[in-house]
Length: 324
Image: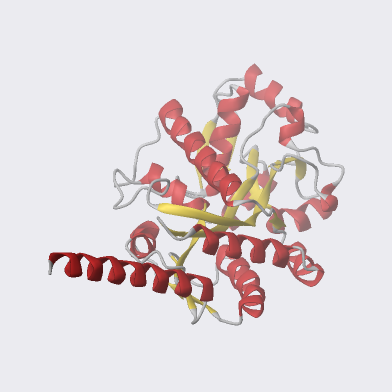
């Protein structure tokens, strides 16, 4: 009797494994939920919808993006961390998740430990802009002026948790600058202060910077990408002149719950890589000033980890205090 019971257990176990394997091979057999931990309409949200609408055509199943804002993104991220790792619940991961680690004393998840990296979509570079009446023509001019008058130059930002704030802090730390931090209630006020000379420099998302550069209302000193951009070919990249700070002000990609089957992760990564190469989609991204950057899951994981490590170092170096 015991032998029969043992055989039954073996057969049941084998059947369960076989059923799971078949289900995995048939993935996706239904729609896939993608949780966006922030409100609809952000750049990350729009990028994800463009990419995943195309990917849905390859899989024959829709990707349903659901916005779950709250708790600085913690509500949405936590819901995915605790979801079944079956490929039917995914996360729109982004730069904001790493910033949340710095801005909050504790989070109910660890973005590196609790999630599987799937694919990188891309990011929106920023431009280091200078006030037009300051006489700065290059980054070297700005750095020299800041070092000649420690504590006098002012950088503009909007909110201590903004991407522009972290980018400016990293640049100042990399260049060894002692500068003033001037917060403004919104990007319009910050740009007006820069154009009027009340602020000396400001890291601005590419879409907002381009028209002001074309109208000569500001001076473009550098872009944050590792290489020059086709639309600003005369503006050097910070990476090429010795300041390898993060390339993107905002970036986004796709993550999954821990232990999601590797073949599902690979299928998603391959499909997204193909989508990012579609000319029509690339044209839309260029109009949005988004630079696409396909990556393997491993490379995306390293990108994510390196970005977080850089923010943690910045927090410790300049003593950034959490908001709560």
